[in-house]
Length: 396
Image 1 (tube, rainbow, N blue to C red):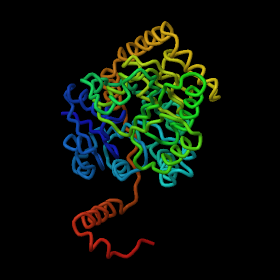
Image 2: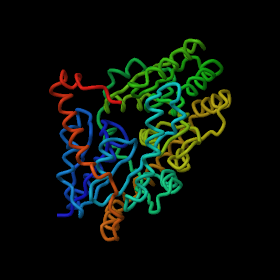
Image 3: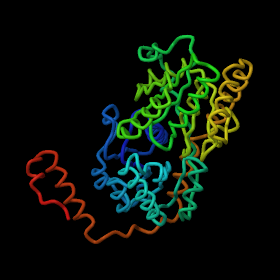
Image 4: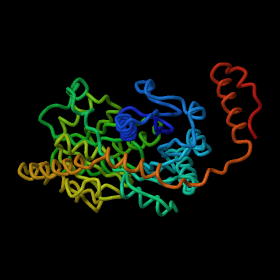
């Protein structure tokens, strides 16, 4: 049986990469491939669907193909690099480090190093795939000689269930709900959303609120700066909802009147097409992959002048016929997206890689696997004998 495994650092619940990884596995298994998902960590709700990345060493074979989802440098990535399997890299983009300087120094360093580490795979991969044309072009600029696109075709099944309205019911009234969905991180420019909303609320509609739905753990410093902005400008009715379940997410889309996005760096931006699917009019900043993702639907803006954006918001929200026309165009964009043959494209790329001459074997340090074994033994000490682990000398 032909084998095509996937490897990545983390399998998250409810995020775009997680949905794509599980979708790829379904397609591969339905086509008769043996396919497992190897990770460093996984959300507890998905752990049963994964295997530890260290098990990949024994599962490896030169005739196998690894689909390596690269985001930031990781132990899983470095282990996969050294294995004899063929490799296709699937690139979800790395946010430029400058967005995190001052708000998350560790992530800024990881992004900088991750982008530098990515270039080491240019000669290792049989094919490097972006999940959008924007990401493919990024790979090409980084020196990857063989690139392609494995398009994101979002699976909306997580939005097709019954809504859990318990959390959203507080906001289900005759007020206007402006919604943003996504992680509360610096490249999403939540501060711009707050500025735009403040002008809209002050000049056009005092009976309005801004709902920011998405995880913010690990970005407490950025979140604190946003709370400071809200307080210093005396902006009312801004709600940081946090991470929600799929059923709660459905409820927030159902009560939303407008989806507002100010993000400056996106490799695709799945919440935009989720809003399309849920028939929420979308107003988004035309940056990075956003215009291509919206595919002529929704409304784009190119100037971040708060009064300009607030006027666009008011125009969209006060004209029912305009809203209907926007939603109809968004439905058509979703139909075009769903018409893409994701399964056929994926399987065609897999067959192309397996039939082509393979890339040269990876060149790694002579003691790589000794270091791998030592690292694994230290990890076991950390987990099962923490007192011994803490007694080890500090690394120099």
